[in-house]
Length: 294
Image (cartoon, rainbow, N blue to C red):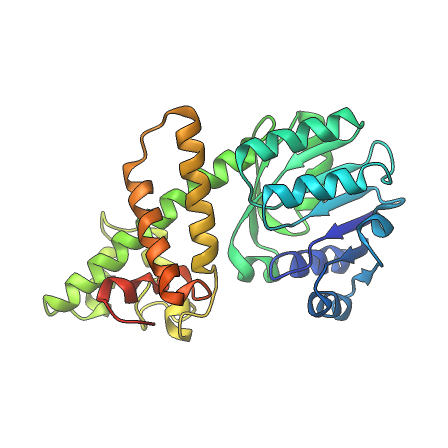
């Protein structure tokens, strides 16, 4: 039985920690939110008094936090108290530079470290079907893989330090831009007299096919499990998409990459959030394209 400390028990971290507990691991967790702590406790996670409390004696430490500054602050807090040689897995989605610093900080203190952001949203976190994009050396990845397989169905070693974050940023830039193009096409189709189902039946089996259409169609009807059939409740919130798109643009600027479509997608999601739609699913941007509040 592996002793696991899990820091960050929110919409993603809570279900992930619960799946580790269901797999038979001894999981102790902590979150600043009492609601998140209570939910995790109901799912079999033992709740500690603080971050430093739960890491003492842990073989593995998993973090799922909002930003790079939070990850670095938590590492600075816990490393002096954690068991030397423990494995640290950070599944937060953070900026590339902070991920590099996290690797360096962990190595300096004698810890194995993997950056392992995820794709699959809250649904994937609950069902244990996440994709993990991993960065780190071969030894750290080999140690992390069995643990990650308790929470996901696809575990990809993308390369060295921060490679997982690089892959996540690129993936979500594609997703944000593709969702906007998909929404524009469905709105145009409606104005040209096509039913959403007719357009879906064509696009889902033709060259315009994408995950945004086939798995997450932004109009109600064709994909029953999509947030569009549940009032655009997330899912993956528009505020999180905007965060990831901004990370992509920061990364692009740092290496001189041209990402015109990514930049435009960032601007449009910024408007969507300014509408007060940050808590809606990111596919709800179709309402912005229609010119109607969600």
